[in-house]
Image (cartoon, helix red, strand yellow):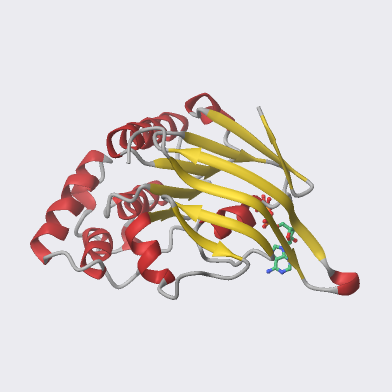
Length: 230
Ligand SMILES: Nc1ncnc2c1ncn2[C@@H]1O[C@H](COP(=O)(O)OP(=O)(O)OP(=O)(O)O)[C@@H](O)[C@H]1O
């Protein structure tokens, strides 16, 4: 794989929820390609389908129709083509969620190292990588704390470190900077851009945060279940 290769390929993806009178067409027919090194934003009003699309790309939600290929491999075509979606997510995808979802009974450092542990890496390697990432995000001094003792911004940076721990090529983020002040939001975006370039990864971010719009290569708007690129 080289920079510029297509890491996410969404073709004709539709998703509806419910049936009959309660049916909601969240995505109608969406085509989207994202290449290695690209950092893109998904924008759109509430209910326009941003989270639905992010969850489909993350193999958390099955489309109603269409195809999805990740890193050159078709993973959905009318049905999931792999039965080990958990493994696929562990290997290829890093998630940064709005609610940071850190495990409350583990320290910040353990939360990050856990990802590598699950992927089968030796414990010492997981701890070293956790330390490196937490230091990089300027939260290394909090590595021994449980999430309940972290501020919102600190917890979010730990969650970002966790998403990056496994060096995924596809990073999906839902409002990653919502809990951060302007300076830190830009720092986090600059870090994500640097990582995307270094690791030949791509980043898809749902955001409403205007202060980081200039950090994206493309802004993609969702309207009524369709994409409009700018
Ligand atoms: N599990 C569900 N069951 C039924 N309808 C749903 C479900 N999830 C989402 N929807 C509907 O699908 C549409 C798209 O929702 P989605 O959460 O993808 O939008 P969004 O753009 O991410 O919104 P927001 O910015 O508010 O998070 C909305 O009309 C929503 O009400």
